[in-house]
Image 1 (cartoon, one colour):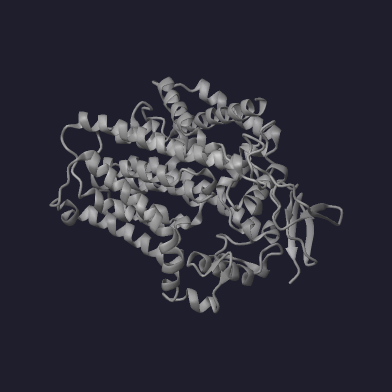
Image 2: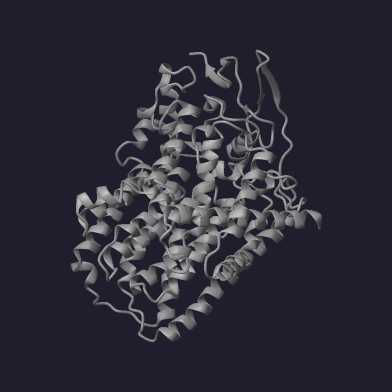
Length: 562
């Protein structure tokens, strides 16, 4: 019972801290916003995650995120929560807690994602025990694939709960995602097409993303990017009032956050070009856009995020070889290594590799469209179709919910703004399909947007909104029930397992005791060597005879002899 109490208490203490930072960020960047409006409250949770992540990226350059640092950080967040008030704050908190309770079953996992033991847990644990080490990417290929989620999670390292809180951040994303959607679904200000897209989002992502262990570092960003794109769609194509640059400023920090979660969201910056073709003149953008606190936060997050890429690998954007310095820096990864890593990731995304097979002539395979037939056979028919089935089932359920279907809605065909916006979506889809066509690498979000936007134009919500909202309440309850039934079934199965992932340490996930070797480099740094480090002390990774460690100005530099 003590472990359960610690687990639940830690989760809600951290939740309050995140909300506190969200209120604080809202105040300093958008102090003119009325937090009782949807445009104010729906972003608070995400802003809190954003600000804590930014602070983590900056602070890890100088200190480890140990108990002392994290306690101070979150005490400050809780103070922000209690000292910064806004109207209906109690109602907001009740709604957030209610949603978190309804989704709490997802947090109870024995087996986390498959990459936890390889690099998610070791890298996050490294941030709690060390300040940054230059050239850390030499120790593990996974350390070259940085996500800001690791830096966020490292701040959740607290007494008693320790690293068993490293998956809390993922559920925070899910909670704030659902709060956003529910508020928007029942908003009378939105166009019916926008409401439909939010309803589709609620159904598909809650039914598809119900297992927290499968989120990794990929799905949180996909949840966030979907609602940001729909919001941008609303502001640019459906708002009755003249388009306002302030609406885009709300989204800007969170666009940077998506990119920091996974760099494959960089193409979504294309969406920002839309504002140049709408109702605002370029000179107005320069005045109201580039000289704002929102834009400053956007730039700061990306600067510090890509600084960590540079520190770990010697590349500004890892693992893009064209951004790497190679032998020009003593700690940098060899450019050939980064080329091979980049090829491997593309090979894997194009179904050219799996647990039991590898294609021959990899460079030829990934070139042009040579990979299509294998991708269809080994990925599309095996994994992709399942997700399409969930998506089209969501469309069908919403159709039955609205009980109205309109074939002749031609707005989509004649509205230039809508066509231009959808063209941007298709361009991003093409980039995804031709370079990394797996759902995990941004596919869930872009495939959803490509299919759901035209589908929404086929629906026409009936005029009796009172009846619609009543039906929606039953619909939301249905999705929540299915979400929990699937997780309860999973939890029961995890108690019945007979391997290391048996739920024997409830409510904490399983950690394997790992054997490792110890290497003492010049008595200045001890590195622990193992293939899958799990919770081994840091720094931990693959050590060979080519590893060299030096120290300069208080920082360690890891290099490999070339």
